[in-house]
Length: 216
Ligand code: SAH
Image (cartoon, rainbow, N blue to C red):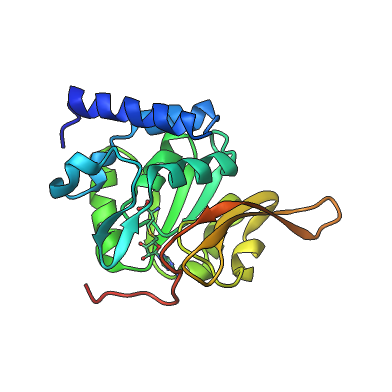
């Protein structure tokens, strides 16, 4: 795993592109500027690691496009030391960005292969998130409550279990919808105790599925 001047240069260009596309949170831009995205793609795709594109990472899943990671991270408004629950570790790239933002990250992945790969790469990079091979619909009750919850797969129904595991001043960010295209939704509790949601643009994620899968 080498982070060459060329990679650093390409990454700088990508961060400038994200800023141009409307990402304004300096912490997010800087954190993404520090995390080598090419470490999360197989070496055959090194050339594409710094393009604003999603990519296949095995087990029929994709690493989210950099703009998608940036938007979700920006909406999350992470502060140092916050406990963040991520559903869908995938490649581990979003996990690394959350760690770099200073969060204590708990991340669940239902595909054994991806969980194992993400563990290896994050460990090599010196990140220490709590990674779990499990079903994100269940959350992690023994580590709750969480300040923030981020779901990186398309959610057909809001998982009540995850709302229960969120602090009362917490936020849940997820692509919500059943079809090919979903809406990025932020859910939080109002001062009167009801859950309210806001929509932030359309995205396309792989679906959130139930139960663990070890068939790869
Ligand atoms: N943030 C990741 C996105 C990966 S794609 C990245 O940038 O690489 C979404 C991931 O969610 C897939 O790896 C998929 O296996 C996982 N997933 C889908 N349903 C899940 C569930 N119920 N629990 C945990 N992970 C799930």
